[in-house]
Image 1 (cartoon, helix red, strand yellow):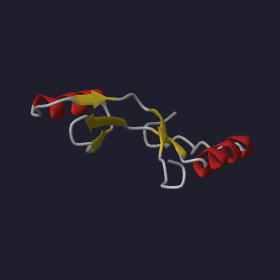
Image 2: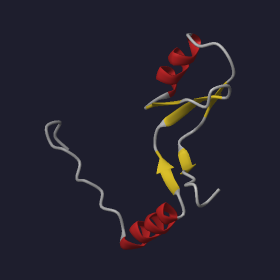
Image 3: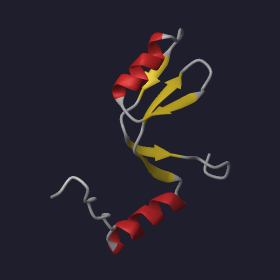
Image 4: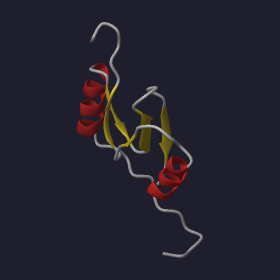
Length: 80
């Protein structure tokens, strides 16, 4: 493929869209970024790659948790 040609956009299947919609209704979404969370304050930061997240953590003190990309659950007040 020539360098100036872009890859075609990958379209989601109807089944995948349906499943993601049902998960979203339950407060569950897919997180493609790496999340760094403070266990002390609850604040969260998002990064596209590990080196960027690790560089951020070098400057921080306290208890921090580094997550992998994956499922993210967003609880609303009626789900708690």
